[in-house]
Image 1 (tube, rainbow, N blue to C red):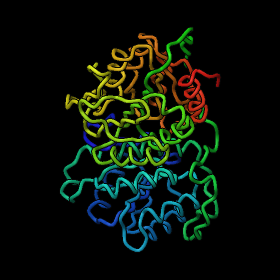
Image 2 (cartoon, helix red, strand yellow):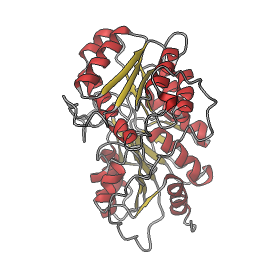
Image 3 (cartoon, helix red, strand yellow):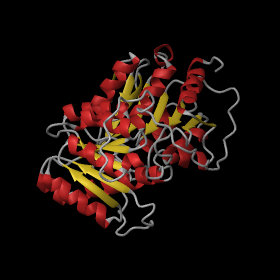
Image 4 (spheres, rainbow, N blue to C red):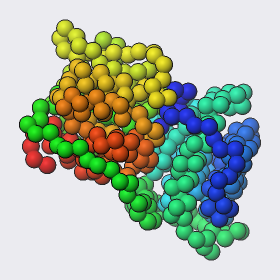
Length: 401
């Protein structure tokens, strides 16, 4: 997930369309700021996407959705008449496969709302500069926004249904109640599997003394679901260390959400803090979180070094340190996310004798990070999200899955 200048892989947005008009990604922009709407609309066009409309509030956005069936909606949280939080479930009811990316400024309140929107079915969020001048001058915001439109829009266009009467121009569909599956819509058709080779399982493996998690785009929801599936009884046996690509403020709120969901104390890691079983440590946004050997056991190490894999915090930093500090006594999982952060760290962990698992392509929002680990032959299992929880619980407890 990305949001600060060094939180996620950054790519230069395309300057012209590489798709035909039949498959062009259709984008709807909803924001109460005329400056934001104008700039984002211009960027969408320059990148070769199809702008189907702009809206100053959620009510207008729903009307435009009914007319144009966009693939991606860039949805502001704070808008008059109908805000983004209220509009989101109605959008998903109208079009369960639409890819909604929330936009918000970096405040604790907006971070909390953004994470709740992910649980409701938004695919991602992006941090908006606080001022109009910031929006105008922020290359990072532009690049990250265009990248998300490209990734999520491409996924949606592969499964887009032919235009129907319900989305014909001039037709205004009344928002229906949110169906039970709308929060986690399944693709209309299965994605083709990407080939990979599994790493042989280690015999007589060491009992894990730490659970390591690396994730990015789509990660907040995936991490929460997986930890809840593992269960509090197993999680109390060892520390859980998480690097989720997020900016400052968001990581602290993310930790609070995990604590509420799992019943396990969770917080951002603090420098020189001793790592204890039964606690969840989240890498603070904008800082690398690693590990070091302390007099009483492993301790948290925070650094402000340069981005690794264009990321800070970076998964590789934690994983490489854990390979030294814990050796084979780890259980590691790579979840959904863009890029390849975590692959080099996973290699160090496997060389130390620890097992590495990866989320499968079908249940990943973006199969970048787990796909990179799988294709490198570093994962001993590539599993759907629910099965990852079962497999990790078995590793942690030493009981059969």
